[in-house]
Picture 1 (spheres, one colour):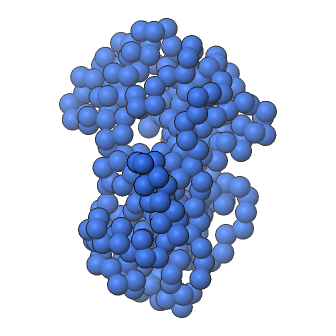
Picture 2: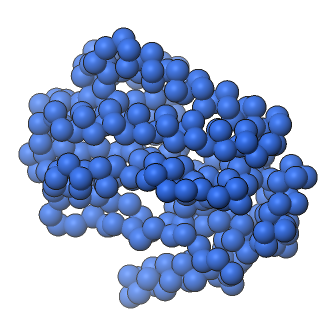
Length: 302
């Protein structure tokens, strides 16, 4: 039976490198300020949800605070950025754009992979599913290139926080000889992330892996899961990957053919929307990664 593809976490250390990245899931209650600033920090990068081409200004941050409907996390992050700027720290988007061509490409990439996902979700054809992941990986590669350039051009020490999908940046930093450190809790990536990361690394992706990845992506959307914090996201990710890895190739082919993204759970004896207790009990029984993490947590409490 396949093992879970887990990534060993990197915890905060007493010494951070001149470039320090925090990688974690985009969750509604985890705030940027939880990780603090480097001693003598000169630059703070923020993940740009929309095209951005300049350093952030205090005026713009205050204007952002006035927008109705901001989540508690968004408000905390903006206030933290304001505090950083008042300390003389440059706050800028990692995906900083230098010209209209880059702006158009960033927008086009996002629209292209979103359209490809809708098409794949409608057709459930293997070629459309692969096309979606290839377009999404291409979009991520372009964004990572922008972030790498911004890091190279920015004053150090520098701190940034990005989603775990961007953890491939660590390899890019190594290739460029950029001294860096990072914090990322141990986790089992979902197959939808595994496939995109493999594509970003230039590794071949099998048809079976595409099916696992698409079933995972469609399943999370079907359930409408929005974990409240990074810890809950890692729990959900470990569950979906463990369930998928326990299925045979025949089962996966059937679920894909039947357009049944929730089948990975039900085939493992779980309801489509399991409770936290049911998730933890299942992982305690079937995931060595999960059992190891629980043992480590218990040791830390002693």
